[in-house]
Image (cartoon, rainbow, N blue to C red):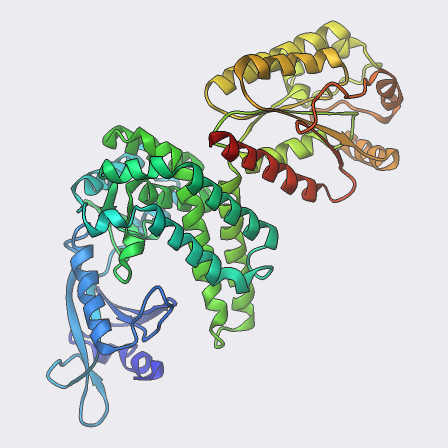
Length: 528
């Protein structure tokens, strides 16, 4: 049955017994969704993507019935029945099942758009209370969902590795199209490393019955906050994608919250889910599964580029969206699970704060910036300018020492909370650097020193630009650079493997990629 015949017939209001005023068609890569008044009819496309196969009428009927059965678990009042689509003697399509059946549709009640979680979030109406209610619903569902037997097998290392290998195989053709080559390689290496060092932990998850017949596609557009919370449109077409660790399901939703710009609600959801489930072990798995699902989203969206009928303007938007998902997957893969202490070092204008900020975004690290801390200690507004002579006023030696001591003290607090920290400062003297070295040693965390250098002409341009920025807390100026150079003590006390030097005028993003790889792979190796 050609797509055009389905679309032509099912977009006509008179096709339906209840005669809706209008019919709206929404297409996905696997379905036609017809919104016909108060009802929705979902028809599966006759496609085969390897991970799903709807190519025969029998398969489409089976998966329609599965969709109905499985979704009644979390949205029983919404999923109504499976209806046959038939063809009469004149070749016209009808919902009269007595004719020659050519397809099937899942019939559902239409949910009010303004009650969708994604809409509520956009309107600022999804607070911690709502996220708590969603977490409670999902936690209870997970506790009641089926487990054991075939379901347990879906939590095995073999299955998890297969899922990832399938991802990598299916996305090779999108390298440097929707996923940069360096991200593809890094994520692949991260997954292999993670699975190697967490084999026993993942086996324990199976033994603890944490592998369940879940929803499988738990994102914002599938959650409705009405008189009751309804979660719909679960994955029916592949058990491997639905049967998983409950941590994977929680990770999926928090990934979607992060992607859409709601990290606070993601944290609220996790906090409440842990409260209801008591599953504290899942914290060690969240970033791994967030990476997986962000990657899957990037992959699935990339598949749309294979459809020749997609207009060029739409292809550009599809590419942009897929790139964003893959970039998020890379960020999750890079995110550190254990604390480290990193510090920048270098002259004013060498790009320390820029490098610290961008590394922190990928590694999930807290940045302590001495430019800001110094003024906080003196109760000065961060953007208030103090153009003192070198080593004078608020930059006098005793104030600088107190600032560094406070920065190290704050770093210790955050490290003891399990967080990685970047100390963003000049660290021009060995005595200042010794404070950080001693802290890392006493707390038993890895130490990394990143020295930033830059040609004077570029530093001068940066400092002149910075002077015009009213919100920049730095007071660095060209005229004090030469004085700082005289006092800057060469870094030769940091062991090889912990010390890195970057010219921030020449492709510093390549340095950050390499730095991220060094730190993350070291974390995985240290876990072995």
